Image 1 (cartoon, helix red, strand yellow):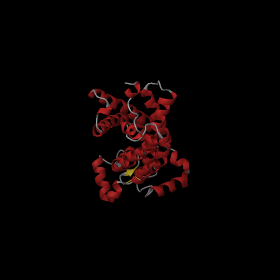
Image 2 (image 1 turned 30 degrees about the vertical axis):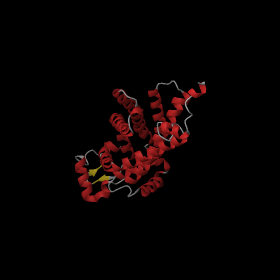
Image 3 (image 1 turned 30 degrees about the horizontal axis):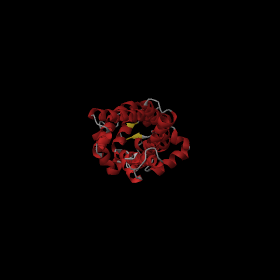
Image 4 (image 1 turned 90 degrees about the horizontal axis):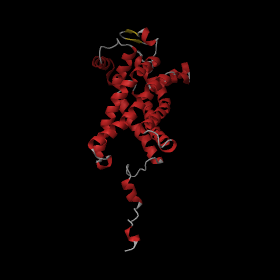
Length: 275
């Protein structure tokens, strides 16, 4: 028997695609990075918009701790006075801003992870790669987010409202303070989001790795449903860790972007908080 008969048949392109980790998307290809960017939009824009009621109360209580006695009391009060629209007030800059931020966060993270880990320093510790890539991605993602975050916070923390919608808010800020007014909270936003994202991605990557290690089986041996469940669990673990890391800077973002002349029904804003 000739040696040529011992060689396995050359796989077709369709067969190669079938065995790629992401189906028909080749890792670190243009299609892969574009898919991550799109995934970031879907992951961040709608989800942040869905929790607008919680974010609304959080921002108001950060600026004036005495405005509400608790979250449920706040929602009842807002709903009674303004209805559903009031509870979801600020949803439009939230949706646009966090869609942009998600595109930058998840899209650029994979780009920088490939650049740092595969091209520039292939022998670098993987956790350091995750930390560096996530910090770099979030740096640019926050530049996209910052103008919309500034408008959102001003809308949510001022009564009567600083603006009734995103377009009106943008016009008012730029007319009075120029484009710089939209970016005055950028540094504390970096202080909140960069440690948050570094903690999130590094913890997520390590948590997922540990979960599969505990099972004693490689990731590829599990179905898509189980892999998704592992990703959710890893994301939950990472979310708890990074929320603790980012909270102090989150308070500062709300304070710096709030309208200092606004007044709530319960009284003036605490001057010690907004000064």
